[in-house]
Length: 421
View 1: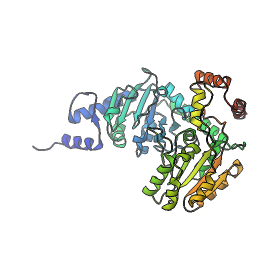
View 2: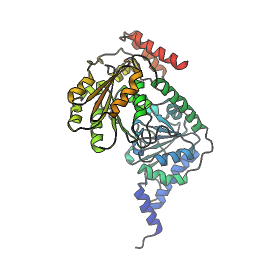
View 3: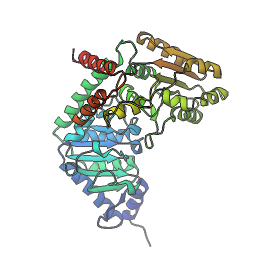
View 4: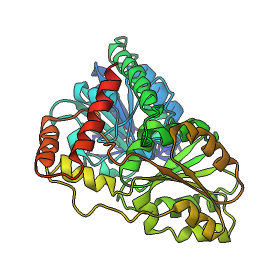
């Protein structure tokens, strides 16, 4: 039987990975085009459209920014999608969730339409309330469509190619106020991140380490972080650039992934810069693998933020449960000395005024390097917007006998005062 032009178009769209799900009417070209039209109708009807993009949208930066420009929609990033678009893109509001940004949270709270692209972000309390926003979702795995948030139209396929097929059907949203509000919010947010990242307090703030490191990374850097409070500092303080890569255990939040991830990344990409920003609790769990990096002369650079505490567990006990910390103290380790004992190079940073210079030395040193950055153990990973129940539980934990409660309260109070000046 002779093939028609419609058959050829079906083949092209199927190669793009665009499929019809949820029993949309029609088969072949009719069904595919109907799915795209229905998705476009939902998005074109929105006034305040937000885009939530995850690691499944990696490689679709240009298409995401074109959609964002057309719809006047900010791009919110799940953490594994931090490199989906660069942090200096005028369309992104950065991360979402406990370690996200305030503009991202506000965009989610105010949007009337949500386009999810390549993400299965699991924390539904940070997504729109049911019934608040109409939904469209693009995912290569059709079983994940509608899993986290109810959507009207789902397109199963490759993110980049599906967006390419969808773009011609989208109309320009002439009301730019929602995007402009997000852009103004991000200007204020980055000013706040710079203020936190350049403070000269002693003990050194962990934000300073991440901020100074981010400025020094090469354009081809592969950035690895770990689970815990360190993920907050990496998510917020490192401005990822186009061409860089970023990863952590975003699905399982497994501790100790940072060092082996860095080793694997350097083996896979021997000519790229590989840098790990990890916590002391995570590093100490698999620290012997630093000897593996020495054995194979892998030039990884591991920056260890040292506060002698399982920080995420500590703050979750206080803010989520209202209990004093329990069982989170770590045995102090001289990580710089350990690196040297393994045959690598070790540096120590204690003074924030020395942070940049020492990081420059570390990044320029051949072979595997570990940098021990000693930081303030009382600096909290504050959520973008503190809920009343979180504030109540925090006060409750202090009243119940939280160790060093005076120092913790003093640290938080001083930080808020300095940010208000």
